[in-house]
Amino acid sequence: MQTEAPKSREQEKLYHAIIGQIAKQAQHLGSRWNQESWKRFLIDQWASETGQTTISKLAPSLDGERIVQLGMQSRRFTKEQGISFTEWLMYWAATNGVTIEERRDYS
Image 1: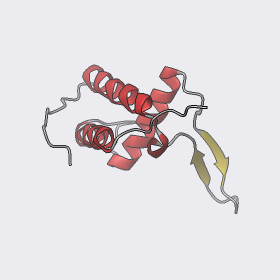
Image 2: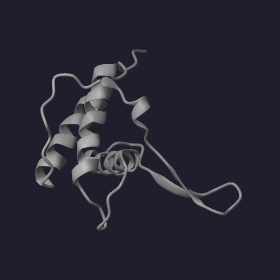
Image 3: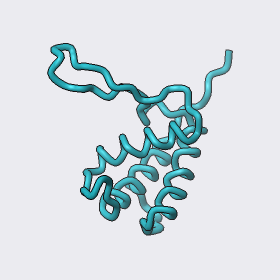
Image 4: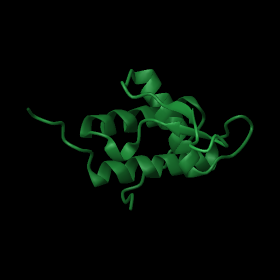
């Protein structure tokens, strides 16, 4: 059985840089959100729009005091998912008024 190749570190750097630029420019629900929050919003939307099998779910915390979001995490992306997510981020940015600076170094 052949497994899919994991995403590369370069892919990860690229989509984190794009998400960082989105976080600096975009708003959701009239508010600014940090990069980690945007990452969660964007992964959830990408997964929904592209029919990924693991969609986020909400569940009560173990003590019943909070809601916990469960679902897809970028650290488990395959190479193909990394490509798809990066392309989708560029599309999302373009259709939501976010300008993505082209940079050569995404470290």
